[in-house]
Length: 259
Length: 330
Picture (tube, each protein chain N blue to C red):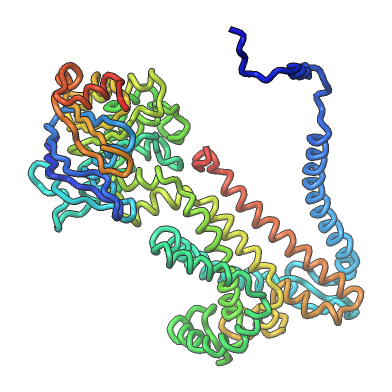
């Protein structure tokens, strides 16, 4: 199910502006990789290039290679729509479809891929996905209520359920907890721990403790200055990164002596 | 050390603190509340005044009428005995407005969608500007253009409908004349309400939150699937109110329809043939030559139009309110 990702020499541009330069790293299947770094260092941009979501922004393009189990995500015969069906994404702000019920939100991606299926199968998927997102017990009696009626943390778990309903190979999370309170954050972190049994997870976070808690590998991004492209400074096992980083910049950032 | 940075002289007197006592009512607040409340009440009073006027003035005509007001398709209110009814008006009005909606809603939504989410930025602003301009063209211009230019060019369409769909009575044309028809009036109305519909739906489309659009795309939606998943549901109430505004204009449009239709007072189900009449155009055409009962009869027909447009608007609001919980406004 889970696949590995190999990024080689990736440059990312927004029009003429080079946002990210020379990024090379690998993500092991069934692991959690955290991307950390100051604002504007390009970590979210890198995350979005993994499923070609950056292409949604006019003028954005990437140069370099992103391989999913050896298959080039940017190959000429690759449909970005299929890439996004294979690599799911969870956003910073919970974004359930407000006009859909909880159930329809979970099924949204599935209906795109295969149209209508037998009702029993749909219900199985809804329950499995909501259980997978640790939300089932809280919403099982109100699956027809609007998704927007849930609390922020529940909405975010609903978005995770929606993403895993289509059984993706990889799950990308762009600061999934930054809009949530500490209790909801804890719920999501526990969930990430469970999800990595089945999925390859890449998470962008501003929260150092979160990176230390949930990730196996940590990548630190930095930029030389405003208007300069972001770079990958260091990537290593999370324990090593937080106890014994090789780069001074990493240590400064992690210990809060930054800037 | 006795050096001081402050210049010598008397220290500034302490500013007296105003304290926390005082009347909780401020004159400005009160004035503003009064003004806004007054403006709100004024709307209600105006609406009520119009309704009262319409009902009051229509009573003499309705009392003098010897025929059924709703089912009669004749209009001789000033005869003795007085005979008139709105059946032909209801048919003509709903038919022209219906044709206009059938044509204008899909095209208007399509234009709005193209401008909001498909066109390049420069093309989008040009197109948006042009559609807004179209809304500013006076209806008399549409009427003249419609009868002088469009009507001769629509003969082919009428013939085609007669040739291929003539087995449906609606499209059959026994007269062989294709001008001044309900179809042509409906087409002109469609062009007139197109900018209203597309301008408002465009505004709503561009307000779709980026988060919803990205949510759909990240699930692997194609552009069109994203539109159906994120943009249409979010914009649904706006699309309905845009259509209703367009319908309101189509129902009430007077001068263009008066020019486009022949002034015969009958129910003509052959929409490609000359004939047909609407509430508004009938009032405009007959007002100047009407007698006392005739005027009252026209006001009565105006009252019906008033009620129809009110009902249309309320229905639209009901549709919107029914799914308010899912609207995305929260």
